[in-house]
Image 1: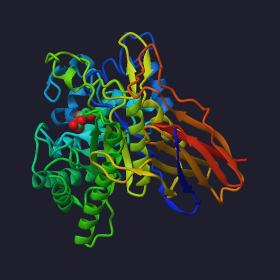
Image 2: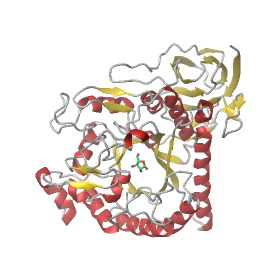
Image 3: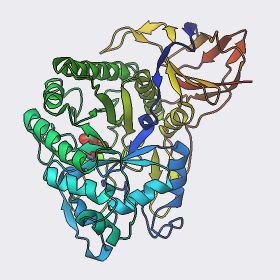
Length: 502
Ligand code: AHR
């Protein structure tokens, strides 16, 4: 075994930006067992009086998720929000056309807001711009955010919610460019409705922030033109443009799979360029930021999902069981988001429970942590503060689709208030450990708190309800001498080197 070497300089004043905590957001859709059997299971031994699973609440709190997107996803494009409020006995059962199931509407807006409070999260609420439009959207804003004295605010009060929910972030539909979407639109059609729906929503509550749908992925044929047209038509009303991207190691090429974040990087950079092109075209002072509101690995469950019988209630759907290599890619995706903290202000791991999720549940049984739980938790817990821009020199490799892939993928976050510095690093090398020399020059009185490592001999190792086979340890060997951290990052590993002022 040889040892490769990488160098890095972390300097306090080389700042990317403050981290917006919403970058550690997640997503709960009415899909599969995310809601029913996930966050909500009234017969479960840990269920509270509202039927919410306490064991799931505890795991979500461990992740410290600040924002949860809801209620979809593809689901929202056929959703009547009115079906999910008021007395439960009067709520209709509906054919749910996005995922071909039955929606019972036992959980709706108010219950979800209650759940979000229990996990200390804000909600990123999506409105239906597929089968519905501006009218239903503005009514929902009135229902949620207006204090009282109008039809919809008083309706909310009659449903037992005296105080407004005060939801700040709203998504103007979901993946409206996709042929699979109910009410798919051309960029011009969508740009117009985003503008008009956004306008009336902001007339109801001018304090809200709006996310316009970008492309469903970078590979969509309309990508780039879509963003440009939509922003051209809705620039004054919207605050964010969304990005969605999922990856999978379909051809079992790990080196290539772990390099996918170079593509993600390119995607982010392209959307920034498009948003700024429209800004320039309009001679506008306003900057549109990015909401990467669906990102993750998604492919393990694709085949199983083909076999689901339609029109059942909460069947297991999109239940990817993640392995160790997926956790490495998720770590890299988090690093990529952080590197763009100046423009990516919202990001939602899709999703949170059971559906392509870090948290899984057994119906009636335990809740457990998937492999990807760990990098997400580390970033959310230790990645608050200011993202720094380290100077990195790393060996590189070429893979099937990428050239010059840095073996070391890394970033650093400085928490001035807590006097903490955290270095996140993935060693992408398949064979060798990477010897890291990291100069932290002006962090003079800092000491290493711990060096967390997620590693495993088996790239395909998964966790299950009964066995946590992929878990981090704190036996990393990072040491600090005279302002220089030296550490060996094991081959194929996720590393978190934590320092604190002594
Ligand atoms: O997260 C699963 C699905 O992926 C969402 O419903 C949709 O927006 C995307 O295609």
